[in-house]
Image (cartoon, rainbow, N blue to C red; front, side, top):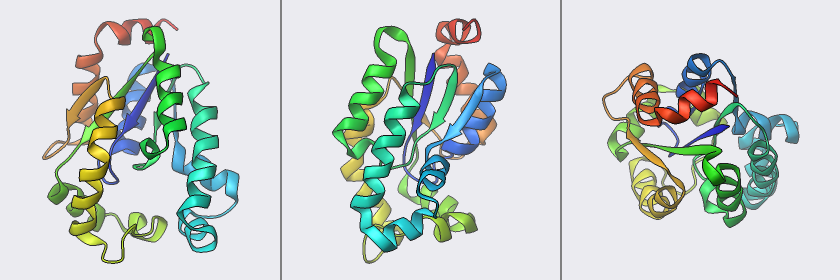
Length: 184
């Protein structure tokens, strides 16, 4: 059993993954942490040295490996759904009810406020457009929303909710799956 959290940067994937793992008595993994470990440098450095293509290539390897794990909650990077191979890895890992993909969805305004409040976010992850800011978030959400929707078994709105409230809502929506997960 595996649970993937997807959504844009600032949606709370890492914090919620930690809380879910605690409730499910399992481990959790942040895919961005795994990418940095694999590369031996920060995401910002990967982008600076090899561009987005270099980052996405490492990300695809990491997502494939994480998708083969069991009894884990995985917080994926916001753009992980962009690559067809990653979307296929999510489908494979959740086939036959073996896992769930949960989209943590937030408004551009809420995500922007959270990103601004997180000092690590701006230093760790580069802007993806020249302008950055809320305009970037709005554009990226428009591009990514269909892919998040394609992958997600569940959608949880995160605006004006604490990570604990989001985790509780996920657990309630997962219901019978949680019982199977805990029994794994």
